[in-house]
Length: 54
Image (cartoon, rainbow, N blue to C red):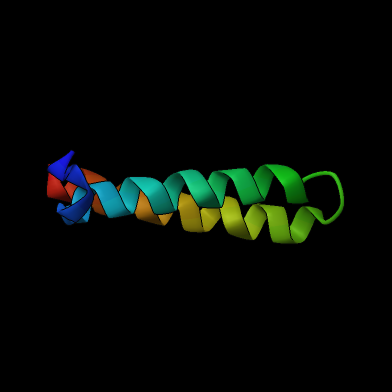
């Protein structure tokens, strides 16, 4: 119940951003391959940041 006031950690924020970028890359893959590749690249950069935190 009191979890609604809890702030997200840096790791949780990066994981959410990674998932969002992958979802965008997937939806763009059917219409615009270049943008899809860019989103996938951004997602990989976020994953590298996550690995540095661990």
